[in-house]
Amino acid sequence: MDELKNNSVVEDDSEGTVVVITDEDGNEYNYVEEMVFPVGEDEYAILVSIDGDECGCGCEEEHIHDEECDCDEEVDVILAKVVKDENGEVEYIEPTDEEFEMAQKAYEELMDKLEAEE
Image (cartoon, rainbow, N blue to C red; front, side, top):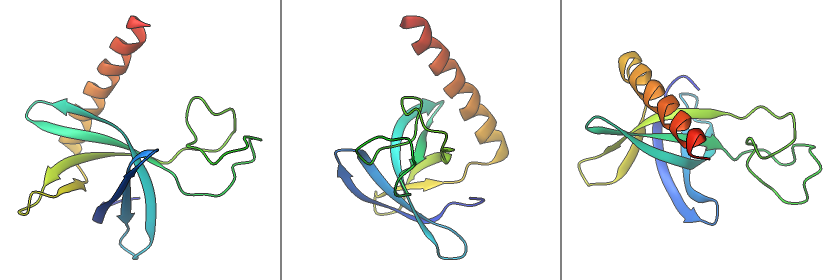
């Protein structure tokens, strides 16, 4: 997905915050907010796709394809900047290249720290 546009938080449910991302062609994709982390004054979110029926991994329940899933499905992950619009509603926007690099570095450092604590 090249650009985040017309996105909205649909609901908070057992999977977490579900976000609908609409691409430039009007196609809608469902993501769950896996984590939000600060980078300087800004916040960024890791959004993981929850679209798709069955992955073929043999799991009985519908689930998110992540490290805990043994299937070979590729996971569609988006790094988005979290901002609030003029009404105070949360929006997820595409970061600039510079913002992306800073957020990616901060995320990797956070993951390294969490791994070291385990």
